[in-house]
Length: 142
Image (cartoon, rainbow, N blue to C red; front, side, top):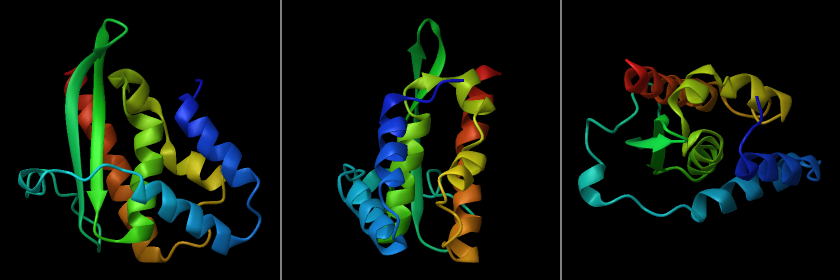
């Protein structure tokens, strides 16, 4: 399955960064470029459980190529996690729900070397975000 161009661009940029500090900076820049959620959207229904930092994900149903799809928006109060949110949005947003439910972001993050330097807590939070997104996609298909 082909990944969205936005995600492919991020993967390519990461491939040029050998130093983990540079990768951290790049993630932070990606996160800083995300638009902020409205205050009302930072609510318990949008909060991702299982993350040590505060993370909110908003799923908006939309048709994609005539099939059920989702657009995601998100935010975190932690800079690195905000960058991880940006990468997940590039991977999952504006795609058919079936593709979202079948895309294993954790495997892709491992291929990119994005999880090897995350703390256990951040890695667990990443898994929680991925599970939340994929569950939203499964619900859209039901």
